[in-house]
Amino acid sequence: MKSFDLHAKRPLLIAGPCSAETEQQTVETMVALAKTGLVDVLRAGIWKPRTNPGSFEGIGVKGLPWLARAKELTGLPLAVEVATAKHVEQALDFGVDILWVGARTTVNPFSVQEIANAAKGSGAKILVKNPVSPDIDLWAGAINRFVKMGFDERDLGLIHRGFSSFGRGEYRNAPMWHLAIEMRSRFPQIAIICDPSHITGKRELLYEVAQKAADLYYDGLMVESHIDPSCALSDAAQQLTPADYQTLAQRILWRRKSADNPEYINALERLRGQIDEIDSELFALMGRRMKIAEHIGEVKRDNNVAILQSDRWNSIVDKVVSGYSGLGLSDEFLRRVLDAIHTESINHQNRVMNK
Image (cartoon, rainbow, N blue to C red; front, side, top):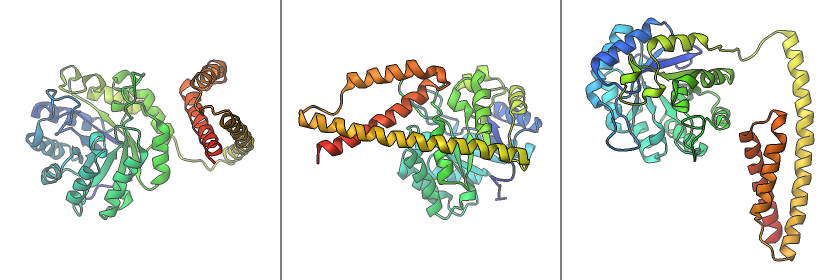
């Protein structure tokens, strides 16, 4: 197999149908995407693990020759999701260049290990989607399984497709950008690809998520496209026609990592210095706050009162979220910070009360 370099260019653009449904649909979509000149890798779902049985779960191995035909016509490499060793074997037999581990598979270390064993020595590149749940150690563990099987980190990639969360929000899957950023810190040599299709679940939201990924210096995108999305058998609402994909890809601005301009460097150093000073003051205040929390723990201990006071804490959250939203801080950010402060405060009180 000819080796494909995940780092050959930025952005790395991966596009294709959510599912290969028919030979005509698959080949026509992929050829049309290739003609845009804005696709580096063609993708399609062959095996589709779905939440509920009875929905379209993929055409299976029958669709692999269709992908091979599209590769022959376009000269572009192929990417396919795999969930078992048999999937790996069959995909490689039909010349698939990139194997990706889906979100439902990443949660199962046994399945990930099976795929790593089967792909070892194949020359295929591996992309690992974040797990369905927001468990960064599970995501990192999946990467480490491939590393232990001898895969170089530069032959591995991350796909950020968002995380399931309770309730319905703006997006199909909450981005939780901070988790993807943490993964990049843990694995700086590994490419990170954003999947705005699965994050948003809606084609009209794709641009804003794709642009944010570009602004965060992601290495590329994976976008779903269908020759006629209205007829798609899976995820119709998030797929674009090849023409609309071209419009999206041309619209995104991919920024540089840095610049040599002295004015830029000086301005950045000055502003970063201000942030360092504010951070110093912020964490000093946080330390003082935890000291007070410890004194509260002593008072509760001496009066045999439980640590958790839900009514008091809920009133604090409501007051902060309503009172400080005008500072340009999102409700999500304020709640996440408050949750972290609350957890640390409880830990301090617990240590005092159980000395």
